[in-house]
Image (cartoon, rainbow, N blue to C red; front, side):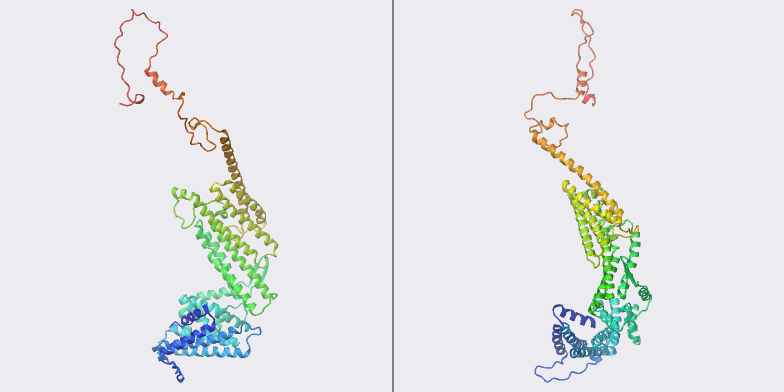
Length: 615
């Protein structure tokens, strides 16, 4: 039958664009249509007839009968809420006459809801166990609102307890946010306020109050709830573990040498989960080892969720005290303000730690362009991948990601400075200023590297030199602060070792860029001298010189060529020696008559090929 879905969906649709009066008007139209479908609507200008009561058989045969009862109950509830909202702004509050009217309308809505629950409890109605549970929870919710408005705190807590236990069990069984919204927005605040009026300590959790007020005599309801979720009524090992956690929740909170007492149970439980998440984070990071940056950063999700829960619980406790009219000078409010600063600072600290993990080794001071986005390959990158990572556009993409992370870190540090009580704490403010200088230097370094990879060394030198000045301001401040334990997860506090390494690294980078700028100046000077010399010899005659300036491609050779000796290799002279016979100057020259005919000499074999090689 989906009673809760039927009610909540219509409430949300009406309140999205209107108020309770709009919802009441819409319900009147829906009721008329429902009566027409059932054939019980009063005709126009007809005589009014009293409507017959529906039986369990009628509900079993036609679900429209149950919907008609629900719509009638919702219209009475909407009428009461409309009157309550209209008098909320009154300075003197709601007068007794108006309150009686509101209570009467809520009482009518509760009686109709309880009659529907009785009908669905009969076998003839054909209702499922979940339908019975939802109808009982809805009736208890409306009855609790009526008793709450009538300031009957004890019975109101008992009615709300039934609704809370049932909706908690349904939320666990169905994993629906609809039930969770009802618990967080309507039921839990009402139980907490009514319990406060009954002088119940705030250290008692809402879940414990609801379990103690739940009527254990309703055997069928207890059985159905246990089938859905045994933890809802305090049964099962998981619930026993939760009860133990509630008992062992921290009672005090220490921040910056100031200790305050935690009086709210929700804050105590949330702060206990934060302390537990710290230990789990350290163990998880130790087991990950050399894993991907995104996987290491995902380990921070649990502690970020725990700190966010602590922040929400503190904010709700402060809002409740303000609604009760508690002044800012009250000791409870002062303790909550210190708690608020502590839990917010803790959340900001771990958020910064997660961003520091994503920046890489030494907070991004060491260059690493291997992983830009997506999944990192499990095997060793190939030479082609390494060449691809060395391209300027990929380096610029990584640097752009780092600058975005540094911007997020700096914004978080500024948020920490704006927390209550931080500005008045001079040592803490100076320490936060040192952290700001440290991460500003890292951001400026990333921007300077982007200029360096495109060859703009002058701008890169100016930026890196500015980063070095910022790092020099941060090192003394960060070195004097208490250092975290070795191997602890990263948070807002950079270690003195990181700051010293970064300052020394920037000093070396400044020297490197100064050398590059000096070389650029020499090249520019050589280029100016080259231009001042005017016309020079062709390039072919200056191959033994290294061109300091640009090469004049229009003056490669001289044309038309002039007659000039051409250098050649000495090997050509050796070859010529084998073919040329020179006269001997040692022997005297013989007369012509004495000359005898020379005997035919053997013809030497002709050499073939280059240098006598070949066939």
